[in-house]
Length: 437
Image 1 (cartoon, helix red, strand yellow):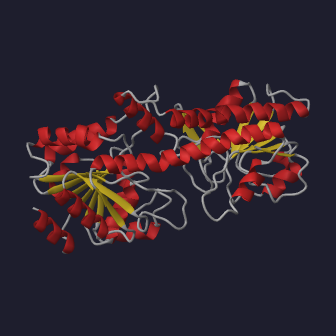
Image 2 (image 1 turned 90 degrees about the horizontal axis):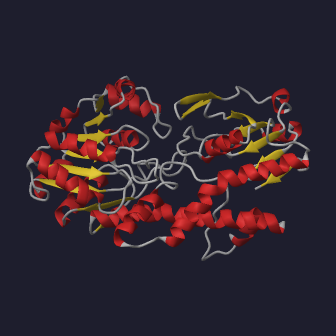
């Protein structure tokens, strides 16, 4: 099986299946197809399937012309019929892995997708989970489901592995194509073959590890590392505020050291699919072993509290202007979770808005990337344009995303008070109406 699959990879005779056409799945499907592998994407959302089949892009990291060309050339198609699995040789599972209401891992999408795949899985197929999850998912959850549902044996009839997605929306340098990949599979042959499949598509290095669990833990480490360090600077930001020291200046000074220090910056909280969620997966799994990840849990508590802390600081700024939060008009600048993208998953800005509304502030938002967002089933529309007349209406402008296509000089000239949680206005003068986190 190993020799046959390696030969098929070399000859571009592998048909690829991608389950989930979101921020991870669609860019991966596009790269597979561009590399010469016929690719079929699956999604439960009929609208996504329709858009892909029409060659219409909806993901920022995909080039519109690339998608249209591979669709027109017959290299990429999409479906919402799971029976397509019987026609593919490589399956990448790229479905969401959110947290439930109790902040515990919700792997229902992974489980249901795997169950559906098992019904159509044929011999000599490679199955790879890319969705972020807790260590042990591939071997403890996916392997038994695939074997029971298909009647096939892992390692003998099909290969199974884990290769964590590495997607950084808005990154102008590293995309799916050139970001190094980690692969861990059940057995050396599976690891070699799955790694070969990624090498046939990607420009980035493919690093092989000894097991899926190592690859799963590696992904958790990547994002927990960021969570812990951001928690550190967020806590220091609170302390520096009390001490009347600018943490931003402190970090800028510290990063002049050419070794042993990597700069991280404070903000209104954490956003995106991975960094705010991954540590919860690890701490949840750790409890199975009677182990508490105390440092990680402490950083999570600090980061989770940042939206509330920012609202507390906003209240103090308004007090200095003899205004209370109640009935104060507040304009939130930016609801995306990071600069220059249209993604608001887990955005701390939305938490800030919710906390402001709890204090009965009258909140509106402006985001040049996100004209409207939906939260808890409710659609919220942003204001259409920043003008002097619009800015002057608000008692406080609260900057929660560092978008580069906002005229911050205009904001400074016409705002009564500004709370800049991203230090995006650091070069703007005068600064009498600007307070920095």
